Image 1 (cartoon, rainbow, N blue to C red):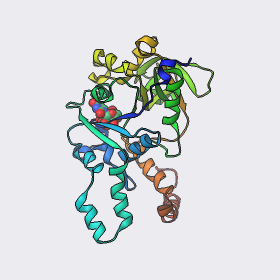
Image 2 (spheres, helix red, strand yellow):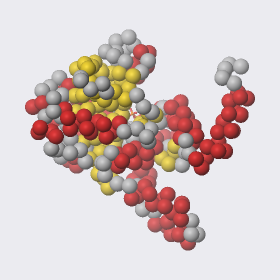
Image 3 (cartoon, rainbow, N blue to C red):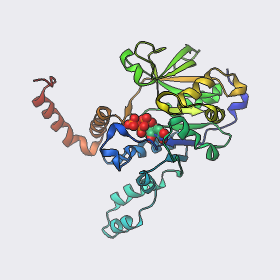
Image 4 (cartoon, rainbow, N blue to C red):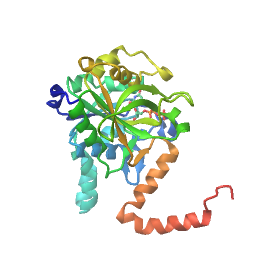
Length: 309
Ligand code: UTP
């Protein structure tokens, strides 16, 4: 049910954790953040900030760490480069360079040590204060035509508490994600979350609905995170804190709802998904598709679909 107290507090801030080590993408991520890997000609993180802004979240806090300076540079002005492009009268590229610095008000706080996603979110407590806020994972992209984050904010306004995004995965994939036990509501795309398990052992997932990298958190999550011990992999897990909230009443920061997402989502921290993302985004770009698509068709015709041939 709608909770009057929550409907008045707007969601205005986005927290984007980017302090992870990106080990799945080594050696590329030895000195380059995985969030800066280009998807065609823009780093993944820029798409994530654009998504936050288009959902009305113009205040962005990035949780950064060692080796992440290039992210700060990317969202800052680049005067020398801008001047060089201005002298050449290269207005299109000048605009492209300036775009990322004008997108949002971007703030930074450092995590110090990558102690897990939950710990990264907790590093945002002072900036966020006592307001609900969004968390967007910096390597997780949602298709530009999707309205997932806006829908999640609406669901928070209706039900209060926290909201997670859930995507249906094959049973054998469930152990790669956090998985939710769910109960239907009167809305076909919204469920009540009754339990959460981070990367359940194969065959033990409570459902096929996996958590993806978008959250609306009640500020009560900070107090829970402060008390959350390291969980799976020795890291402080956001999933563990949300599980606690899912079991609490509204006075303790609950409940937790899930938005069932059936749209396009790309995990760019994973090599195969990264390749798929680059190809799909390139095919969707009018300035590239005309040349790229015929090449891709020829390439596939030549290589066939059976990789063992
Ligand atoms: P991941 O688990 O995908 O990131 O965390 P990772 O640890 O960098 O990746 P691998 O598994 O080693 O390849 C999801 C998001 O949370 C951030 C990451 O930067 C990523 O955007 N994160 C993770 C933090 O900010 N701090 C952490 O301690 C852990």
